[in-house]
Length: 82
Image 1 (cartoon, rainbow, N blue to C red):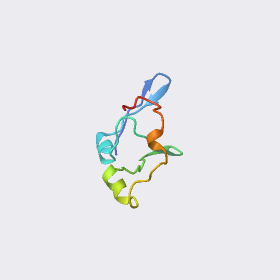
Image 2 (spheres, rainbow, N blue to C red):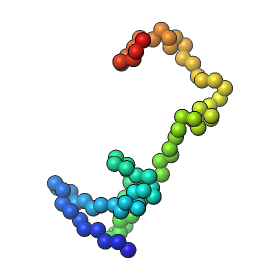
Image 3 (cartoon, one colour):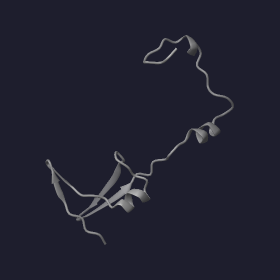
Image 4 (tube, rainbow, N blue to C red):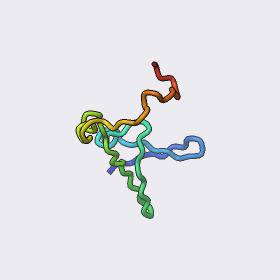
C-alpha cells in the first residue's frame, strides 16, 4: 500500500505517480492514463497503446508500395525540398 499527498495547483488537485508505475508501463510526459472511479476508489490504468516501428509495418505490406497516380506532378503544399 502506498499513500500520496494531494497538492493544489491552480484550481486542481494533483498527485504524483510512482516512478516504478511509469517505467513498468512505458509512460512519459504527455502519456494518457484511464481513470476508473468506483465510490471512494480510483483505479489508474495505463493505456495499452500499440507501439509500431517502420520495419514491422513494411513487413506486413502486400507486394510493393501503393502508388498514387500523378504523385510526381502534385504541387508542394508545405516546405518540401525539390
